[in-house]
Image (cartoon, rainbow, N blue to C red; front, side):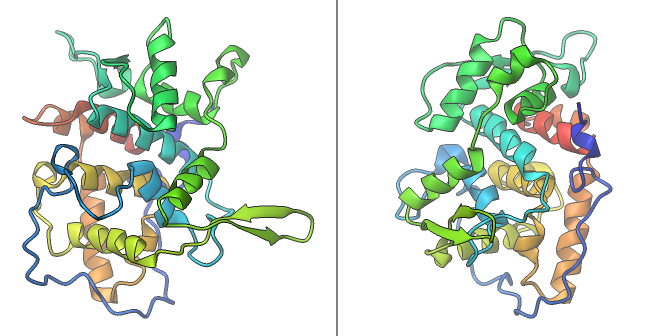
Length: 291
C-alpha cells in the first residue's frame, strides 16, 4: 500500500514550482474589506446569496481547468486529497471525532476515527462515508480511512469501502449549483465527459479568498485563521492544486504566499492539536499528509 506521505505534493518538504507564464496582476491586496475574519466558519454561514461549496467541491474547482473542464491527467494526489476533505467536513459537521489521546498520549496517526452522530448531512458523498465509518466493527485511523475510501488496499474484503467516481459526482454537484456545465470531448481513442466552468465569478471569489488568507489576512498564527480556510489550504496543497490559486499573483506576492504556506506545512500537527480550541479531526487529517 502506498503511504500518503510518499505522494508528490503531499509532504511538507514538497512545494510546487512557480509558473513563469503567470502575468495577471495581484488581486489580493488589502482593500477595506470589512468582512468578519470568521465569516467562513461552518457555524457562522447562515443564509447568503453566495453559493455554498463543500471543501471537496472547492478543492476540485481549484484543480479544474476552466475551459477544458477536467483536472490534470498527471495529478495523482487529488484522489486522496478529496477523501481527506470528506473526513474534515464530517468533523466540522460534528459527525466524527478522534478517540481520546489517553494517558499514554496516543499520536494523531494512531488514534481511531469514531462516529459521533449518524444523522444525515445532506450530502450524498459525506453520508456514504459516514455510513462506512459507523458500520466498521473495528475502528480505523484517519490515515487508514483516507486509503480505504480511495480504494488503496490490498484486502479485497475492504474494497467495499471505496468511494467510486468521486470527481464526477462532485462535478455534477457543481453543475447543479450552476458553477460548471457538462460537455463531451473527443480524445482520439475515447470520448470523455468534461465540466467547464460557467460561473467564473464563484471560482474567482474562491481563489481570492485563498490568496487573502496568506496575504492581507495573514495572522502568523494558525489558530487565529478560519478553520475551514486553513483546512482548504492544507488539503489543496495535498491535492496538488494550490498552485492554481497562487499562479495569478505577482512574483513578489507569490513568494510571500509560498513562504507562508511553507510555514504552515512546517507546523507540528501533534502540537497544534493540543492547543485550546483546536479541531483534532482536522489536524489528524493534516498529519496524514505532511508526516
